[in-house]
Image (cartoon, rainbow, N blue to C red; front, side):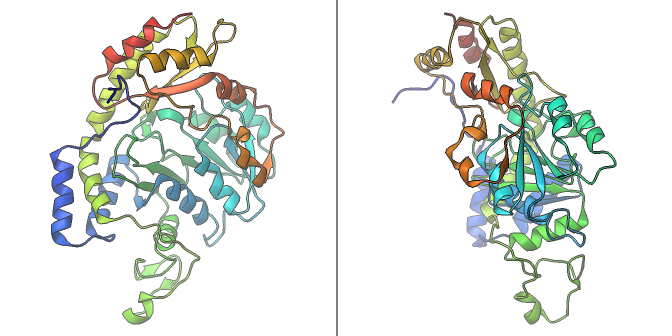
Length: 389
């Protein structure tokens, strides 16, 4: 078997995660229960936010996050409303918007930060805009002061797809906590891993209660007796055990994932600190590269991975970079999904493509990313220095 010099993802588990799983196996209690609750509590404490709701994936976190905005007492969204999203992200940033009948307005990214281009965002906001879904790409937080300034005194909500950016900070506040709610992924390749998994963070009691109902069939069973959806639950446990009040899903995580998450959060500061050390080295060897540009950091990135974008008029093409990485056994992928408007599935979505997406198009054609890790990879990164025409 060929050994990869720099893989995209490796495990961050040790004996503690294995022991935590074994205790769940010994308990014979596998469906969502106390371990999931404990993980949610530790996760919300880490983020310094009020609530965290664990689900079975980051994609499900995005789905429930969008769904919750339709079911508040005074709904934030209705079908047909316009939602602004960056043109580069993962597919399940966009699909819940389609599934809930929203109009998707794509806005260009900044070619350097890979996040929303603030000037283009400013031009894209209209009286029809009801939601901005900011995506913190590859660990990099957005310019949240500027985004919030643009929507101040407007009837526009902000939410975050923070699936790639757990632990990043903007002005000493964790990304994923700037909007009404934010999503996180704990899939294998992410900052922490619970096998499959996702979380929604929010400071809103109403959104939190809607999320825990939607997560499990839309029933009342997991709601507090006095709640913001039904008012007061009856004392008849039989009646409340199968009372459905919202058109929900079954997106519950399992206790094994919750138990792993408890141990992973304990390590999170150290995992991210090492990623940042790797990033410092990466920046030092790449800042003056004549062929490639890298992502410009906003605030404190948690460096999910390292983007490499071929510079204009550098005399090389992305295929040359791909050939080099392949020869050096360095794994690579497109920058998320590239510009999503280039994907064939776009024909099924209700989209506004009137905006200038030139930066997204450039990154789509000329960019890729390589992995970062929770252990020292600085010598591996030095391989990139030898890339030349």
